[in-house]
Length: 504
Ligand code: NAD
Image (tube, rainbow, N blue to C red; front, top):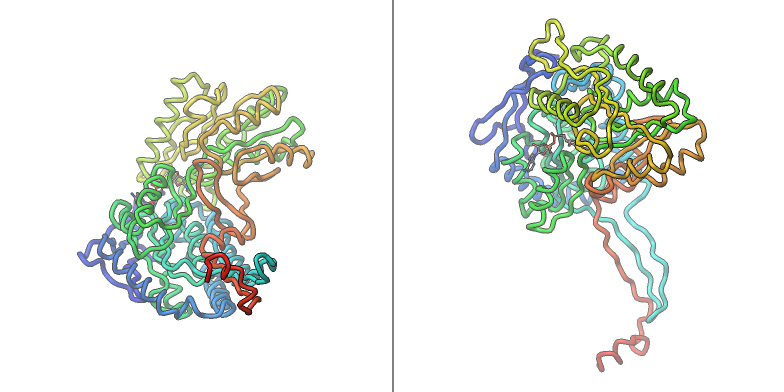
């Protein structure tokens, strides 16, 4: 990767400067080095992008293209993205602090595979659905036509910028919408690079895809409130999600929201601890815990509690915290100082609340990476599920291990949360685990695994973790209006009951 990459705004198929010439620097969370210089879109730039998207949409150049062709073009793009996995992974590592192993094996390939799954699924499910024939009041048949919403806005967070952008761009484009994407200012580069690859391919007409990095309070608010926008797909904090809902309500836009989480990871007493204990760390410490559905509350039966905690501590202390580009690194940096301060504050709160720290709870100094904010994998025990560290999203490498006496208690505590995004159940008995999964009020449950999201299945939250779903047919449908077309089969006047109803 070049030392400092430069990206402009992508509006109407052109790479342009912000109207006021503003730019911002993107820095490497591992060491603070500047890695990108990005045009900073303001409200007026965002309006231009939205208007371009509206023109492209209304022209029908993309919306009226046969589904098969749209999907085929997206599959050609999939090949292009695949050829750039290495470069996109470098960007995600330098711009977002993804360890280079995670970027290459997970964050980038998963996003690209999800793009393919959505392009293929959109083609398979087609645009029309039959509706059973009705004979009251007179024979008629109906069809449902799935149509694009129109202009979609996508607002994404900093933790998984590439994947979460793909979860919005792919279904929007596959179903004939145009889109304006606003990535987080901390991590704009993989989205800007995606925009460059798409534009250079000439596979998607100008104006259909627009990328405008910029501040949430300016470019983001414009996108969420502009009357020309029909739908907003947002991933980020629950607090900002509430604001997006308010802004979108002014013109009653469709919204989908993927928000915060405090997910429960339940070990049953018959779990295979050789997998469940490392699995619990995988659930919590991937990307230094900066994942919305991280399993940050581990529920462990009293009968095996001490053994599980001892094993967790030993494994956690063996994780190597370091620079994201170091191939030996298991856990990379936190995104920025503010996030580091938040994590430290919650550790202090946990101690004040009476939880016991069994490992971590402090900064790690990484030689040669002074500008990075690194935190040790941290485990608390003696945690009551009512404590703030068990109720509030920390978004860092902090695991609360909570003892339980009965599975009923574990389920009740797991559900005692404003969130409901992910969750895990570990057991040798799959049927037993599924019975627990059924009772968790959460959008995804992994059994004997964690984090593995399928491009063919839905992802999203219960309660304050979100509205709507991404991925699979469920995610695709969120980008389509349904139009019902009623076709009457009783052409004669004497078959029309409404002559009598209105006295015609
Ligand atoms: P954030 O809510 O601060 O920001 C998300 C995006 O919203 C950014 O692009 C930001 O610029 C923009 N934004 C901020 N204020 C805005 C406003 N007033 N109007 C319009 N846009 C605005 O979130 P973050 O700190 O970037 O990401 C971390 C959060 O995201 C965590 O809470 C995490 O749980 C959540 N998250 C959820 C999922 C999920 O799928 N549910 C996935 C990843 C992250």
